[in-house]
Each structure stands twice: as structure tokens, then as C-alpha cells.
Length: 185
Image (cartoon, rainbow, N blue to C red):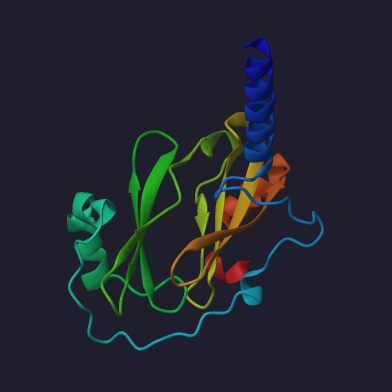
């Protein structure tokens, strides 16, 4: 019996070490400090959205935030990845959540998580995006450490938000990025 337990523990230990070595879906490699991703590197083809569809209530995010998503879809300009309308909500002090709505299909997609802990760095806008780019940048604290600001870069593929890389920032970089107008970065 002891041999079986030892053998099982070894197998489980090996299996656990293999599982822990595989990055989670939200994981991204560090960015090159001197060459962070640029919006121009992820161009988006802009589509005509003169007439907009109704919001599709086909997921929990769309159902929970239907009022603000409908408002955004009906009245706000396309401001992300060619034909999406970004809709964000405050969820407390230094906390933001939200997502975007496809102005062609009416489908809503949530952000990958809640953006929080961005205020200690003087960040006013923790979410950076442009209408002509598929790149989405989130700003906030690195893994909850409110002494280290971080930028996380994602590419919207049209079906999923793919992590590109993360970059630890100086407090000055975080503040400047978080106050920049979209046209300037």
C-alpha cells in the first residue's frame, strides 16, 4: 500500500507541476520595455454603422447591463476596433467595469475583468483604445500591488480578447498614459 501512495503522489505531483507550468488564459508575457505594442500595429478596418441592430441579450453581461449597453449602441459613436462601441461603468472608488457592443451585430462582450487600483498612480483613464485599432490597453496596479503600476495589452480578434503582453510602468509613465487623449498615443 505505501508504494501505491508514493506512486500516486509522484504522479499527482508531476501532473500538478505540468498544470502549474501552463499559463492561464489571462496570462501575457512581459513586453519589451523599449517597444510596447502600438495602436498602429493592430489596425482595424472601419465599417459603416449608420443603422444599428438591437442589443442581443445572449449572455449574462448583456442581460445584466442591458440598459447602458442599449443606450451606448443607440447613441454613442463607434470608438473601438472599427465597429464597436465601448460602454464602461463605475463600480466604486477606483473601480471600472464594462465592455463593448458590436454596432453591426448587436453582440456585447465584457472586459476581461474589473479595472481597479488605478487611482494611486493618478490614472484618470484606465482603459485605452481607438476606433481604428484592435489594441486595448488596461492600466492599474500590478497584481494588486498598489506601489507598482502596470499596463496590460490585449488584441481583440473579433471573437476573443487575446493577451499580448504586460509592462511594469513608472508612476510618471502610468500617469501620462492614463491622462493621454486617444489621438496622442
